[in-house]
Image (tube, rainbow, N blue to C red; front, side, top):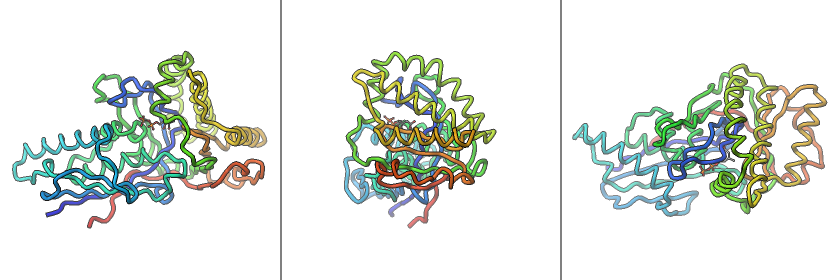
Length: 347
Ligand code: DP6
């Protein structure tokens, strides 16, 4: 017999940034973070897994290409999932011993990896959900998020749709460092996101090593994690519950700028924004000024691409065609707030 399972998982874009680890191997963060899950119509990973007594080893294919399964991050996820399956098999000896068999994992994105968008969050979320289903593990998303977190920190937030928090936790073993839902998609469904792809090259400092440099060298970073983020975390959750876009947008932009400031304060400094990114920042502030309130908010991750959040009714105002801006933008993806991982037809 071949046992199979599959799932899709979404991309999430942080509005309160995760930047810094207190434990590198468990991916435990130095601060809590918040994100919005984006629609899987536009961006998602689809992962199918199969296991059979005749599969002698674990194998992985990403976008049609076979990849090594031995990266420590992938291994950390597989080890946790197999351990949980062993526990089930020990409790119920009638269960097939799936934990002893090889796993074949096939994962595909519906967007080009070269779009400059982090695909690792959706990828690890889908991997962990698909195998949890295959192994018939309890499907509590916060529990599963702790396993996805070991693959990539931000992946833990892709286990939920809508508005999601990653509570940093206090325990050394990571037991309480997990994703929780702040509000479901239908709480604030008119939230839209425009992704302005400024560059799709991958020459930036990878986030994993960038955050190590910041933790080790930035003084400003200590202020950020102790004084700035804890307060902002509570305020941003409240702004989501209140559907207060002006507040939410203000905090989102401030936190993006705070994150890029600690990057600049690192030694050697880390630069993710380019001239086009800075033009976008100015344009959004000018627009908000002109409107007399915040109707659009930008955020930038570890690269020059912008994600602009706004409410649907303001779309025509936000998507003004300023030729100056679009000179540096190669592609715009218009998307919106989306659901968490979805079941797919099982073969
Ligand atoms: C700037 O989750 O990619 O996007 O845990 O090392 O895999 P690892 O890092 P990763 O870092 C994401 C950084 C960020 C901010 C965020 O998504 O919160």
